[in-house]
Length: 135
Image 1 (spheres, helix red, strand yellow):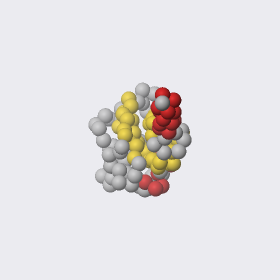
Image 2 (cartoon, rainbow, N blue to C red):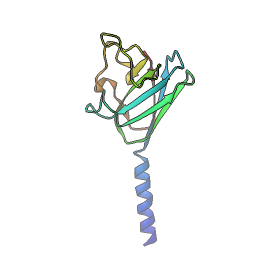
Image 3 (cartoon, one colour):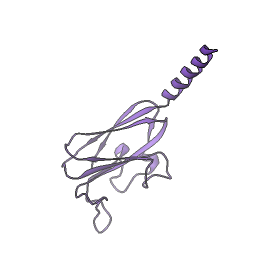
């Protein structure tokens, strides 16, 4: 009987571990170490460009930035990020709405407006590493 419980426990633990993937993000083209970097993780079109399912805020102490979202279920994810250089809690924009602080998206879209969730999504079905270039 103990071996049945042990087998069930092992099966349960291994099945959970197969769904736990890490998404590592290298942020490149960092030009200053002012302020904070805000990173938001999204898993659907309904959260895209709104509050994500997870977020991180990092003090910009160096130009080499790496961020990890741990233990994600397999699926589609997209990242938005921006560097809040003046630490006012939001991305600054000019009078016509173009960001004046560095920003980026997964798959490096968004040169002429934000990409769609579909264009920015990355498939996470194993540990994955991506690079996002600040614009």
